[in-house]
Length: 162
Image 1 (tube, rainbow, N blue to C red):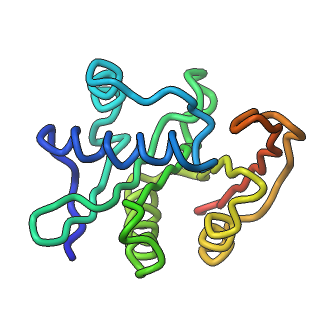
Image 2: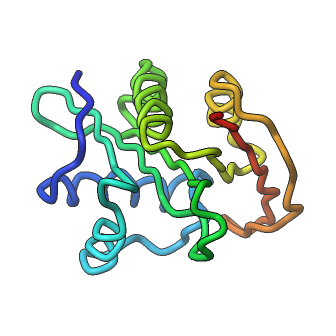
């Protein structure tokens, strides 16, 4: 497996992996799959300051992590949001762990101060991964999400990098 910066040619696989999570998990509160136009807009919001990394096996993208702007208000520029998605058949094989490590290292190199993550309260694997890397639970948004006909608590996690 290699981890590298994403390329435009990766958009379709990134979107496929994301859309699988949209349809079958609470890893995202999106309920509509991302179409080609939406995927391109999302991709173009990422750059050297807000990178997307992919995990690749035998030339195929099997997971990705992104560092995104947390808010469009300039006072929040030192803080970013992290997101990670792994293709279903490659989960629980250490890929997310390696991607997560790389994402945090890049955030440090880019001199961010903190990283925020929003995690569905029932997503124990994501909670475990974030806590493993030192993220702290800083709050709960009670029943802020609604998916699969039920309300979902959203946990806010934060890692201070300095």
